[in-house]
Length: 132
Image (cartoon, rainbow, N blue to C red; front, side, top):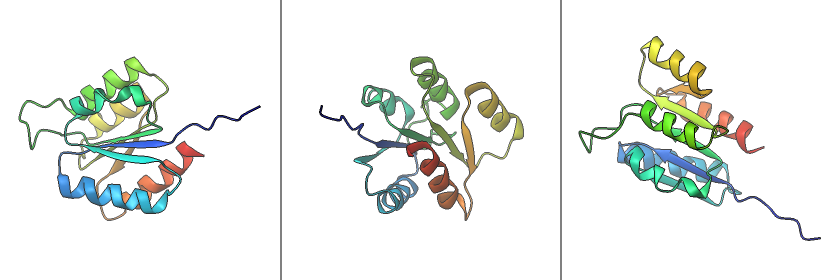
């Protein structure tokens, strides 16, 4: 009997192109068995690709630097969780408001990583948990 292996993919939803590209390259180097690491500048673009059933979705909270009327990360997380409640989501944001962070963690079962000097290493640890 042929064994089917699930393809592992990571979505990064980040409106800062340089930050998104850097995180993409970092994750590709840390997880060579992941078949694809895609970056989306706004959440709406990532929703169009949800049919790919990404293993992990890393999403920024504020996504409106390119498109002023872009949905927030929280709005996108809600849509993703309504579509696929078992999605593995990491909210990666400079957001320091505790109420936003705690709402995301408790309501949607997401992990939170604050954008700081250790953010990439923290994301790496969470991705390891999700893909193992």
